[in-house]
Image (tube, rainbow, N blue to C red; front, side, top):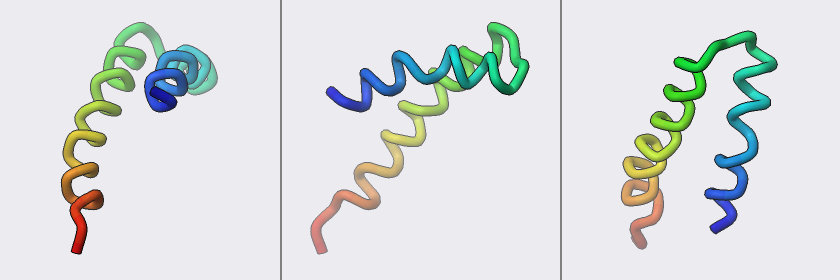
Length: 47
């Protein structure tokens, strides 16, 4: 739940700060779930 809140509010400001356009926003929104989907199974598995 918290991830959705952070990801929903942070990208517009981040894109504004780096001077990107609409395509930057799309890349940020796409990159977050992709990296999360890969990292959670790798780092979240018990050893």
